Length: 283
Ligand SMILES: Nc1ncnc2c1ncn2[C@@H]1O[C@H](COP(=O)(O)OP(=O)(O)OP(=O)(O)O)[C@@H](O)[C@H]1O
Ligand SMILES: [Mg+2]
Image 1 (tube, rainbow, N blue to C red):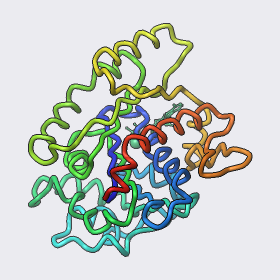
Image 2 (image 1 turned 30 degrees about the vertical axis):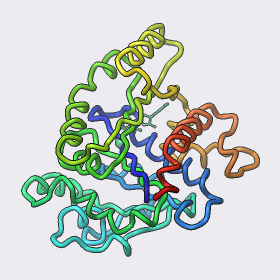
Image 3 (image 1 turned 90 degrees about the vertical axis):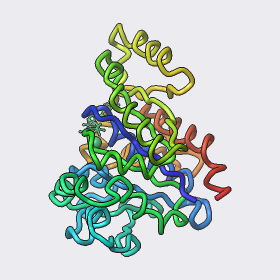
Image 4 (image 1 turned 135 degrees about the horizontal axis):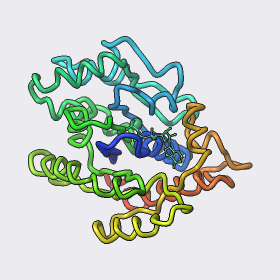
């Protein structure tokens, strides 16, 4: 049974997509020598902008509306997800469902008028739960049914938080949304961790902000991701950072290179595996 991890924060530009793509790619690399389903990762992009898919398969990430994610969310009955699954460009074991930008934006508008509007993604993923080890879901920077669907479909949430005073103080609304999803749909949904992102050691207040995060959310603050030009360049080159800055000799054991960003995202991949691999293998 796949472990499903949603990357969420309603604030824009905090590193959600960067985290989604690098976690998905890192897991795909780490699990590349696992047999069958244990090595397969699925990336779902609930943001109509489709930036996560661009990093997975630039140029092939779109499809006509009726063969894309929006059809799974809005059609009754929904089409089958199976024929929609596509293989990513950089990792043969990283799969995705293509998107259609305008119909995804439209989906966010019509979902509130449909039956079962909060659990459509959960229902759409049900038939392929046993075909993947991990499902990673990126979300848009808005509150609404696309985000709710991504949370209802998940067992774990990773919350990237920009390492700034504003970044730390703006988390209330997301917490309330997560609590509502736990109350009504997923009592088992848990916050895997707060991930400090865009961390800048040159700024004096950085340590103070990290301590404030620890104080508010003891035990669940993950090791920070620092500002890195490799992450920005990988993003604009439509790649994950492990593909953009590979090690000299790659193996499932060695993902990271001399690039600090690869080391930091490898650490996130390993914390996820350490905490959840037994859930994948125990079914
Ligand atoms: N650690 C980092 N160092 C440098 N640049 C980064 C880092 N993390 C993200 N970025 C860059 O910051 C921008 C925003 O990041 P990203 O797209 O991941 O955020 P997001 O939360 O998904 O944004 P949105 O809310 O618009 O979907 C991108 O250009 C990305 O390349
Ligand atoms: Mg994004």
